[in-house]
Length: 298
Image (cartoon, rainbow, N blue to C red; front, side, top):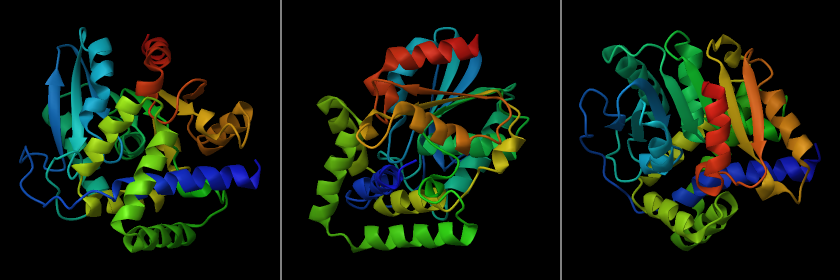
């Protein structure tokens, strides 16, 4: 893959965190549910359980269309993470807390191999849950994320180098002034979402998010390499990706190869890329997304 292409993808990945770091601080406090302070849950419908996890600085409302499509005959458990979209932040690292509390939530509710669907950071969390708790996840849908974002630019990157790269990202984020952050936010969201109304909605969630939580969560994700770990996942997995935001830098087959290379250790995976959607596939081409998930769940 051409170097300008992989550099562009890596830049967008880093900009995702920078975009949401523009929000004013939201104080940490008591989250909605003491049993799982790392996230709140909205439950809709009855039947087979589906857990939906949104991405960085996003509300669970990003899944509203998905809930309407799937939760007549299934029960949707829609998560919003602590520190995002107005949910009170927690102390300490967010991602391990979310993973463990999701595992506890599945056990406490006696779910039998639920479907887990995650977008972006939420897809990474779903992946991590399925890696560390392989017997708890029935089927896994990952919407536009990779096991090792930092490895896009350097496929042979070491763990130490990933942490160094993540530390550099943190330093850049913390050095930007408010105006630069606001400008970066809108530029990044336009690269990720097509319709202005959806961009405005996502920007609103970002303003309600805690900047420290956003920064720390992105740095945590950028520091991890799940490429070898995905071999432990037992659940059949569907990966839905996007590429049109980067069409000036490469072809669809090039992007397909990028995704497939990162997921090559996952034994039962299907990778598909949308032709008409940017990063927020559920907004840009929901019909395509539902069709692929429908076929996967049959």
